[in-house]
Structure formats: C-alpha cells, structure tokens
Length: 343
Image 1 (cartoon, rainbow, N blue to C red):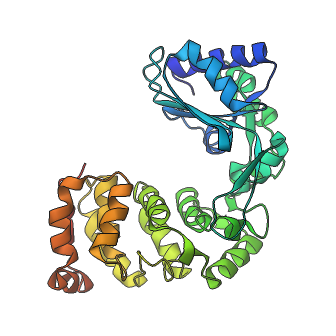
Image 2: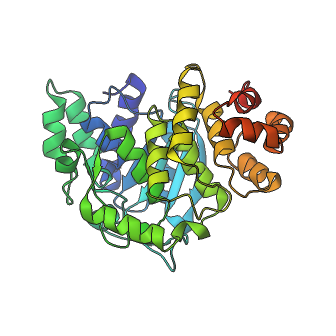
Image 3: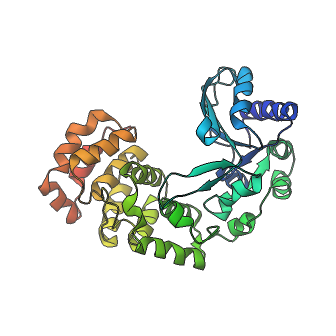
C-alpha cells in the first residue's frame, strides 16, 4: 500500500499534525484508489489541512528540505524534490476550503471552510472522501487494510457505495456549470472504472453541454483534460462518450469527429501498442483539430509542456490537406509518422 519513503513521509506528517494540533487528511482520488486496492500511491502526494496549509507546509519543510512554494491566495502550498525523501516528487498542501464561481468556467473564489464543506466542492461522490493520515498509517500496518480504511474514511456523500456499485454521481445540479471540465472527467472516470453516470447527473451534464459551457474554457484547460484522457488505457471509450454527448462541438480549438472515424483511429493505434501517452495526445489533437489555426494549436501544445522539437513536423501534417484526406479514409499513417519520436 505504501512504499518505505511514503510511510516515512506520512509518519512525519502525522507527527507534525500532532505538534500543530491540526488534522491532516489524504483526500479525493487517493482515497478512491486505496479502496480499489491500489498497490501504492503516486509519487505526488496531496494533503488537506484542517487549518493553515501555508504555515503547516512552511514549518514541515524543515523536515523535508525541499523547494517550497506558497500560494496564499488559494491557501495552498507545495514542496518539490524533498532532499530527505528523494523518491517523493512533490507534496501538495491545501487548507480545507470552499469555492464559489462568478460564472460558468471561471476560476473559483476560495475561502477557508470546514472539512465537510471542502468535500462538498468536489466533482464526484467517489472523489469526495477523506482519510486522516493516522488512519492511513493504521490501515497500512493492518492485516486487513481495506476493512480499516472503510471504517475510517469520512464519506458524507456515499462515495464508497457508488464506487462499489460503479456509479458516477455529481454532488449538486450546478456542478458542470461551475466547472465545465468536469464533463471531461466524467468521460474519463466512466471509461476507466466502467461506471455508469447516475441519471440526474447525466441530465445535468446534458443541460450543461446544451448551454455550450465549454465554449468559454481556455484551450489549455481543454488540452489538459485531453492529455489526461490520452494517458488512460481506455482512452478511446472516454473520447467516444465525449463525442456521443456532443461535448466537443463548442470547444473552439478542438473539434468533434464521428464515432466510426474514432473507431478506425483506435484500431490503427491498437496496432502500435508501444505508443506513449504523449504520442496518443498528439494523435488525438490532430484528430480533433477542429477549426483551430496551427498558431493557436501550437500555443496550446507548448503551454501543456509538450516537446517543441516536433513542431515543424507537426505543422507540416497539420497543414497537409492530403494527410487529412487520408485520415478521413482511415489511413492515419501520416498522423502517426508526425507524432513518432515524442516521449
């Protein structure tokens, strides 16, 4: 469940929490994946602090000796590359907080809040669970860790039940209006977990798509979500859902394709089993290029941290109508040739 360095990290966090008189939790996707029996957590650790996360991280960094960055406005902080625990890439700290949105897709206005309010702002019930670090350490040392986890988790929205029932449920009617990128996450989690979207949640998603809430989202944010989808084993099914929902029709920089065309693309990619997530993202970006100019597409690409070294070759295929014609007929070799070499 925990690597040696992760166990050491959480022991240090637990001791610091006791000394500071605050509660510290792992939250969201970490808890979900632990309940699914994940062998170990990622190298990046997310913590929720029942108090001042910035001051907690500031003091805690004396133990980790990493690169500390504080974001006072959002009550968050991060420690990168801790010298004491080199296997840990990054530790993120966030105070329990609430979020309000001035308009659909706007960045949130953040305020300190109780842990229950913090969980209420999450995207889906399966990600609205929290576990005190002390409970995590107890589970890690138990012969039956899942039973310990299940009893120790804060779960005000029935996330454990939805997880076992393979149900994806948002927490309130305005969820997709507050943050339209949750539409992409709904497709990604539904595909990954083989989960059905709960009926009311599906209705609210369709209402949000009908209101074209994704039209106001910056290309970089949409690209970030597509990049995450490209890293999934079941990326094709997630894209298929977005196409069926017509979610991509109003995205601007990214457009939609028909499902039959996507099926041919998936068959082509499946014959290239060694393709990397970066290659798949570039391939998907070409498929979904929509009405974007190459300049806008390039800016989005660079903003997402993708390699600049391939841009000349990518521009050639981006502007090549013959290559697009080949792709429409099911021959994606020009696309794939352009993205080969990305890593």
